[in-house]
Length: 299
Length: 255
Image (cartoon, rainbow over all chains, first blue to last red; front, side, top):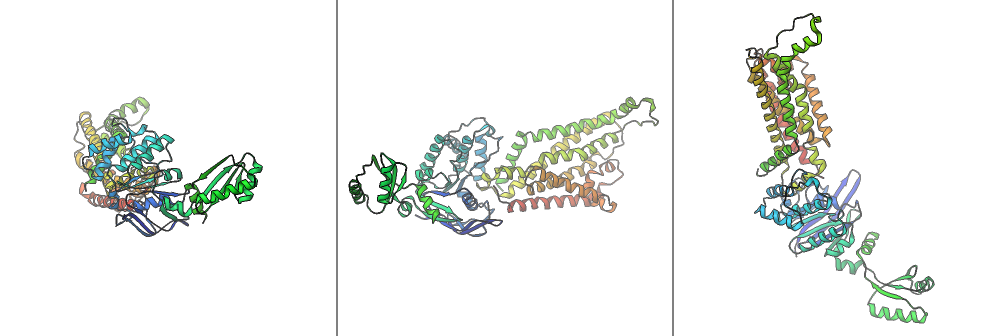
């Protein structure tokens, strides 16, 4: 699988603040790439540099093999962009706005495509102007304009942050439906969204991508496998935590283990019986992306 | 080049739907209707205000008074209404982030400046010509005299001043972060030009003479050809300012 986007040693500062320092990563074609980082980590700055909206101080950005140059639009012809707060001309109807975008992007069969996009995002092709649209409706129009020119690379900046849970789920389903047809780069700090649809994840911290791999490989490299046991009393939980050097929180004890689950559990149960401790519940806990993220930025 | 008519169409729609053109047309139409009327009524108003206490004999109004009102209204109020209406033409696009979606669709930045300038010029041409024709008709009706022989020649410098003035507004708006910045830049340029005009030898080279010498041309006491340097400087400056606006926009990071 070739890479549709490559960043090599990209740097960007605003005054004395070094937002991006030696940023390098690639996105394989056809993947859904979750770009995560704390607020202010530089996710939006990175996206703006990829789109040629801002000028990098150093480094190279390649979209589909072509170098991105500040202010030029060649590489934008194959990208779609959904900003975190998409801005439109409020005096237009959604269809008029999409027509403007279609004319600029030279979309063939524009009328059909506009109808198709409005239907896809659940907006009506009527005389209502964008002026009266809610945030969610604006976000939907944003995705319609971003997909209008059948982009090879779709860049979404915090696309779900303004949506309610139902809207979020709907939006994530829509992004997931594009898998294998469009490469999606989406930034967010809602890690559960990334876990839900991404196959690749990049973690941005201190101006660098600290980890960039498939979700499965990140789990293998950074995720700690854990077992959570709950006891009837805090005293029992405390005794168990001391026995296994686990982490106690009230009646619950979390044990981190390495190696295979079955032999570890057999030995744990034997020790519990010997210590006369009986857990009321026991469950295997898979590491979450939140834990992986914390582990990565701790390093 | 394909994108220029696309953005031009968007600008036309914007000026129509945001009522900017309508407001401008109404303001200029009011100037056009009021100029001959004020000229006609001024002696009556003075008579009513001062009665027989006024010592001097008020001369009967002529077409010259009507045109004086017209050019005074445009030069002292009209152009500033234009500056207020269009001071945010570029700064609003940048502060609201409306260009981001279009630039990322492949819209070249120069077409934004080009289309905006062309639409501004079209509006200027329509509202000033409309106002001029209305004033001309009413003046001919109220004052059928021959004291204003060069009506059309006097109007030409005003049209050309618009070419320069709109370029100043566009450049100021491209540099500014908000409407006020663009407006301030335009006012500063006008203040500087008026100061330069204090020097008599600079007057025929100064674009501001294009809205100051109209009455002299109208009455045939000044030849339009004498303003050729000012016309040339205004047109060249307009081209430089439009090119400058493109250069400024090309360097700006869009948010």
